Amino acid sequence: MKVAVVGKGNVGGGLADRWERAGHDVTRIGRDGGDVSDAEVVLVATPGGAVADAFDAVTGWDGKTVIDATNVIGAEPPSGFSSNAEFIKSKTNGPTAKSFNLNFAALYDQLAGAERKPSNIWSGDEEARSVVEQLNRDAGYEPYYAGPLESAAVQEAAIQLFFGMAQANGRFFYRFAEPDEF
Ligand SMILES: NC(=O)c1ccc[n+]([C@@H]2O[C@H](COP(=O)([O-])OP(=O)(O)OC[C@H]3O[C@@H](n4cnc5c(N)ncnc54)[C@H](OP(=O)(O)O)[C@@H]3O)[C@@H](O)[C@H]2O)c1
Image 1: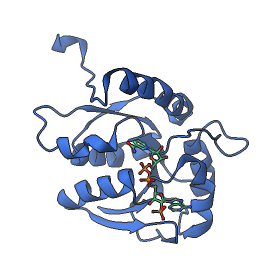
Image 2: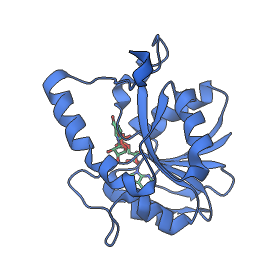
Image 3: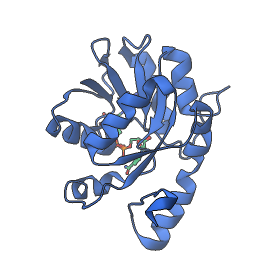
Image 4: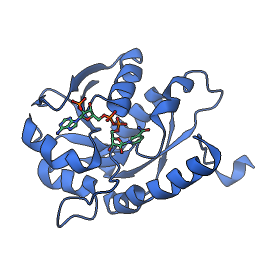
Protein backbone atom coordinates (compact mmCIF):
# COMPACT_ATOMS: atom_id res chain seq x y z
CA MET A 1 0.00 0.00 0.00
CA LYS A 2 1.16 3.56 -0.60
CA VAL A 3 1.22 5.19 2.84
CA ALA A 4 2.14 8.76 3.79
CA VAL A 5 2.98 9.66 7.39
CA VAL A 6 2.60 13.32 8.39
CA GLY A 7 4.79 13.75 11.46
CA LYS A 8 7.87 11.54 11.47
CA GLY A 9 8.69 11.38 15.16
CA ASN A 10 8.21 8.50 17.62
CA VAL A 11 4.83 7.46 16.25
CA GLY A 12 5.04 8.46 12.56
CA GLY A 13 8.65 7.34 12.17
CA GLY A 14 8.17 4.22 14.26
CA LEU A 15 5.09 3.02 12.38
CA ALA A 16 6.72 3.95 9.05
CA ASP A 17 9.61 1.61 9.92
CA ARG A 18 7.26 -1.22 10.78
CA TRP A 19 5.08 -0.75 7.69
CA GLU A 20 8.12 -0.62 5.42
CA ARG A 21 9.29 -3.89 6.90
CA ALA A 22 5.86 -5.33 6.10
CA GLY A 23 6.30 -4.29 2.45
CA HIS A 24 4.43 -0.97 2.27
CA ASP A 25 5.72 2.03 0.32
CA VAL A 26 5.93 4.83 2.92
CA THR A 27 6.54 8.56 2.39
CA ARG A 28 7.56 10.56 5.48
CA ILE A 29 6.49 14.20 5.76
CA GLY A 30 7.64 16.59 8.49
CA ARG A 31 6.79 20.13 9.44
CA ASP A 32 8.35 21.43 6.23
CA GLY A 33 5.28 19.98 4.46
CA GLY A 34 4.73 17.98 1.32
CA ASP A 35 2.05 16.36 -0.81
CA VAL A 36 -0.05 13.28 -0.05
CA SER A 37 -2.05 13.05 -3.28
CA ASP A 38 -0.20 9.89 -4.29
CA ALA A 39 -0.96 8.04 -1.03
CA GLU A 40 -3.75 5.50 -0.54
CA VAL A 41 -3.79 6.25 3.19
CA VAL A 42 -2.32 9.01 5.36
CA LEU A 43 -1.32 8.69 9.02
CA VAL A 44 -1.44 11.96 10.99
CA ALA A 45 1.10 11.81 13.83
CA THR A 46 1.88 15.45 14.62
CA PRO A 47 1.52 17.00 18.07
CA GLY A 48 -2.22 17.16 18.82
CA GLY A 49 -2.28 20.95 18.71
CA ALA A 50 -0.50 21.08 15.33
CA VAL A 51 -3.06 19.26 13.18
CA ALA A 52 -4.50 22.46 11.68
CA ASP A 53 -0.94 23.62 10.83
CA ALA A 54 -0.27 20.30 9.11
CA PHE A 55 -3.27 20.91 6.83
CA ASP A 56 -1.75 24.24 5.81
CA ALA A 57 1.69 22.74 5.09
CA VAL A 58 0.59 19.54 3.33
CA THR A 59 -1.39 19.37 0.06
CA GLY A 60 -3.41 16.63 -1.64
CA TRP A 61 -5.84 15.69 1.16
CA ASP A 62 -9.04 15.67 -0.85
CA GLY A 63 -11.01 12.44 -0.29
CA LYS A 64 -8.06 10.69 1.38
CA THR A 65 -8.40 7.85 3.84
CA VAL A 66 -6.75 9.23 6.98
CA ILE A 67 -5.79 7.59 10.27
CA ASP A 68 -5.42 10.10 13.10
CA ALA A 69 -2.95 8.98 15.78
CA THR A 70 -2.81 12.27 17.68
CA ASN A 71 -3.53 12.93 21.31
CA VAL A 72 -4.66 16.36 22.40
CA ILE A 73 -2.63 17.02 25.52
CA GLY A 74 -2.77 20.47 27.09
CA ALA A 75 -4.71 21.67 24.04
CA GLU A 76 -8.20 21.47 22.54
CA PRO A 77 -9.33 20.09 19.18
CA PRO A 78 -9.84 22.91 16.64
CA SER A 79 -12.77 25.15 17.52
CA GLY A 80 -16.17 23.65 16.71
CA PHE A 81 -14.96 20.01 16.74
CA SER A 82 -15.14 17.48 19.54
CA SER A 83 -12.07 15.58 18.26
CA ASN A 84 -9.08 16.06 15.99
CA ALA A 85 -10.35 13.14 13.92
CA GLU A 86 -13.65 14.90 13.15
CA PHE A 87 -11.72 18.08 12.27
CA ILE A 88 -9.61 16.01 9.87
CA LYS A 89 -12.71 14.54 8.22
CA SER A 90 -14.10 18.05 7.70
CA LYS A 91 -10.94 18.90 5.74
CA THR A 92 -10.66 15.71 3.63
CA ASN A 93 -14.26 14.49 3.22
CA GLY A 94 -12.70 11.02 3.02
CA PRO A 95 -12.86 7.86 5.16
CA THR A 96 -11.41 8.73 8.57
CA ALA A 97 -10.32 6.73 11.59
CA LYS A 98 -8.69 7.26 14.96
CA SER A 99 -6.07 4.65 15.84
CA PHE A 100 -2.60 4.17 17.34
CA ASN A 101 -3.21 6.95 19.92
CA LEU A 102 -3.68 4.40 22.73
CA ASN A 103 -0.41 2.48 22.51
CA PHE A 104 3.12 3.49 23.42
CA ALA A 105 5.66 4.16 20.67
CA ALA A 106 8.44 3.19 23.07
CA LEU A 107 7.14 -0.40 22.89
CA TYR A 108 6.99 -0.72 19.08
CA ASP A 109 10.28 -2.63 19.04
CA GLN A 110 8.75 -5.33 21.22
CA LEU A 111 5.87 -6.01 18.82
CA ALA A 112 7.94 -8.19 16.51
CA GLY A 113 8.65 -10.76 19.22
CA ALA A 114 5.15 -10.81 20.73
CA GLU A 115 3.66 -14.29 20.99
CA ARG A 116 0.14 -12.89 20.54
CA LYS A 117 -0.61 -9.54 18.98
CA PRO A 118 -1.63 -6.92 21.55
CA SER A 119 -4.84 -4.96 20.90
CA ASN A 120 -5.00 -1.51 19.38
CA ILE A 121 -8.23 0.45 19.54
CA TRP A 122 -9.69 2.16 16.50
CA SER A 123 -12.87 4.07 15.83
CA GLY A 124 -14.11 5.60 12.61
CA ASP A 125 -15.75 5.15 9.26
CA GLU A 126 -16.63 1.71 7.87
CA GLU A 127 -15.01 2.77 4.57
CA ALA A 128 -11.68 2.97 6.43
CA ARG A 129 -11.99 -0.42 8.12
CA SER A 130 -10.03 -2.66 5.75
CA VAL A 131 -7.08 -0.25 5.53
CA VAL A 132 -6.99 0.49 9.27
CA GLU A 133 -7.23 -3.19 10.19
CA GLN A 134 -4.50 -4.17 7.73
CA LEU A 135 -2.12 -1.44 8.92
CA ASN A 136 -2.82 -2.44 12.53
CA ARG A 137 -1.92 -6.06 11.80
CA ASP A 138 1.11 -5.10 9.74
CA ALA A 139 2.35 -2.95 12.64
CA GLY A 140 1.97 -5.94 14.99
CA TYR A 141 -1.41 -5.23 16.64
CA GLU A 142 -4.83 -6.85 16.59
CA PRO A 143 -7.33 -4.05 15.81
CA TYR A 144 -10.25 -3.61 18.21
CA TYR A 145 -13.23 -1.59 16.94
CA ALA A 146 -14.64 1.10 19.23
CA GLY A 147 -17.46 2.48 17.10
CA PRO A 148 -18.05 5.16 14.48
CA LEU A 149 -16.13 8.41 14.13
CA GLU A 150 -18.31 10.02 16.82
CA SER A 151 -16.41 7.76 19.27
CA ALA A 152 -13.13 9.47 18.44
CA ALA A 153 -13.67 12.14 21.11
CA VAL A 154 -13.88 9.57 23.94
CA GLN A 155 -10.97 7.66 22.38
CA GLU A 156 -8.93 10.87 22.53
CA ALA A 157 -10.03 11.53 26.11
CA ALA A 158 -9.02 7.97 27.10
CA ILE A 159 -5.36 9.00 26.90
CA GLN A 160 -5.75 10.43 30.41
CA LEU A 161 -6.66 6.98 31.73
CA PHE A 162 -3.81 5.36 29.81
CA PHE A 163 -1.31 7.93 31.11
CA GLY A 164 -2.55 7.32 34.63
CA MET A 165 -2.12 3.56 34.27
CA ALA A 166 1.35 4.00 32.76
CA GLN A 167 2.32 6.27 35.62
CA ALA A 168 1.12 3.71 38.13
CA ASN A 169 2.48 0.57 36.46
CA GLY A 170 4.86 1.52 33.67
CA ARG A 171 4.13 1.36 29.95
CA PHE A 172 2.01 -1.63 28.93
CA PHE A 173 0.33 -3.56 26.15
CA TYR A 174 -3.27 -4.69 26.51
CA ARG A 175 -5.31 -7.35 24.81
CA PHE A 176 -9.09 -7.60 24.48
CA ALA A 177 -10.61 -11.05 24.16
CA GLU A 178 -13.97 -12.44 23.05
CA PRO A 179 -15.95 -14.05 25.92
CA ASP A 180 -15.55 -17.52 24.36
CA GLU A 181 -11.78 -17.25 24.74
CA PHE A 182 -12.16 -17.62 28.53
N1 LIG B 1 4.86 8.91 21.79
C1 LIG B 1 3.88 8.05 22.01
O1 LIG B 1 4.06 7.00 22.63
C2 LIG B 1 2.53 8.34 21.44
C3 LIG B 1 1.61 7.27 21.38
C4 LIG B 1 0.38 7.49 20.80
C5 LIG B 1 0.06 8.73 20.27
N2 LIG B 1 0.94 9.76 20.37
C6 LIG B 1 0.54 11.04 19.76
O2 LIG B 1 1.07 11.02 18.42
C7 LIG B 1 1.48 12.32 18.04
C8 LIG B 1 2.97 12.28 17.73
O3 LIG B 1 3.69 11.89 18.89
P1 LIG B 1 5.24 11.62 18.81
O4 LIG B 1 5.62 11.04 20.11
O5 LIG B 1 5.55 10.90 17.54
O6 LIG B 1 5.80 13.11 18.72
P2 LIG B 1 7.23 13.59 18.18
O7 LIG B 1 8.21 12.48 18.30
O8 LIG B 1 7.49 14.89 18.82
O9 LIG B 1 6.95 13.80 16.62
C9 LIG B 1 6.07 14.78 16.16
C10 LIG B 1 6.39 14.98 14.72
O10 LIG B 1 5.44 15.93 14.18
C11 LIG B 1 6.16 16.84 13.37
N3 LIG B 1 5.40 18.07 13.24
C12 LIG B 1 5.23 19.06 14.13
N4 LIG B 1 4.42 20.00 13.59
C13 LIG B 1 4.12 19.57 12.36
C14 LIG B 1 3.36 20.09 11.30
N5 LIG B 1 2.74 21.27 11.43
N6 LIG B 1 3.25 19.40 10.14
C15 LIG B 1 3.87 18.20 10.00
N7 LIG B 1 4.62 17.64 10.98
C16 LIG B 1 4.74 18.33 12.14
C17 LIG B 1 7.48 17.02 14.08
O11 LIG B 1 8.41 17.56 13.19
P3 LIG B 1 9.86 18.07 13.71
O12 LIG B 1 10.67 16.81 13.78
O13 LIG B 1 10.26 18.97 12.61
O14 LIG B 1 9.65 18.74 15.03
C18 LIG B 1 7.78 15.57 14.48
O15 LIG B 1 8.39 14.86 13.41
C19 LIG B 1 1.12 13.23 19.21
O16 LIG B 1 -0.15 13.78 18.97
C20 LIG B 1 1.10 12.29 20.41
O17 LIG B 1 0.27 12.76 21.45
C21 LIG B 1 2.17 9.59 20.93
